[in-house]
Image (cartoon, rainbow, N blue to C red; front, top):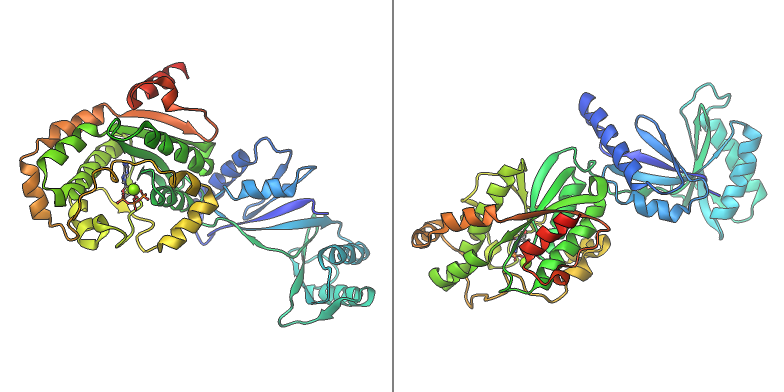
Length: 413
Ligand code: ATP
Ligand code: MG
């Protein structure tokens, strides 16, 4: 019965040029995510219609949930601007939508004032008509269970009742670009998603320690990027794979056990900052959440953070783990994240990591560790790869080291 979806845009309190940019970006995402479906997008300046044609609206709705910046949407029926037609169609609509006794009201908006009845009059006429011709409705102006919405515009009358929340936020890309530190865990993909939802285009960086860790742990990261790439412009995200084994081994040998994690994370921040600078990423993004583990106490964050002056965005800083998991399930990363392959943070976990590591101690321990060279080497041996949502890359298939496998893949692509 629906022939279109009305899409309402997000935060249009933005002014002037920003607003135009918002709408432009949103349309470009919308067009891309609906590609391949037999639908037409009707563009207005603060809302849009997707004309369904013969497409299944459920398929279309799933695609709309990939577009950040959409505030809400409604399934809509469009009819001609005629009161008799409206009466007839409103009755069909209510008979289809309402199956049992319910309270209801009619709400009319008249965007086009040339229509010969006021909003009030239309609501009254239609309510009376519906009450007279059905036996399951009871009028309730204050707390109705069902609201039939009528919008009178100059090109027709629109009927709907539902309003489904969209992703909200801002169109991905409008805020600029950031570098997501992506592990194989539950948190960082969710952090990446939240950043994208807030308008940030992301690239990803992963520190891999194969063969200390398994090749599957690197594969997991690729598989996670494929999932979150669905939300990205063009459904593509660049992944920078950093060979981390040398630094990893060296610090296990040279740094007191209780500071292993602290120094390891300082090295990650240093490398990520260099890679971010090289690629014009304005911020670092990670999945840290206050208090979750030893390395995420405030003292620990401060000690780790001091090695960079790039802003670090932590979308999950204040999130509860259960809320993080529920987002991970919704976006489809959870089942990949919980696959049991160790990564560099789970291997050789110190028995008693410092929960309040001090920056001056970290600095002192780093003095007998020639990390600058190792870092430069890691950065120059970093392999970058464009991951798209439906690419088919199986690292193990190459029987090579991770970096070499990526090289090979990039060559044949
Ligand atoms: P996650 O579930 O995202 O792995 P976590 O709770 O396991 O998080 P940590 O292992 O302490 O937390 O890591 C904190 C953050 O540091 C991660 O969310 C991620 O952003 C980043 N990080 C950790 N390990 C790596 C890695 N190997 N490569 C890139 N980033 C990493
Ligand atoms: Mg982790």
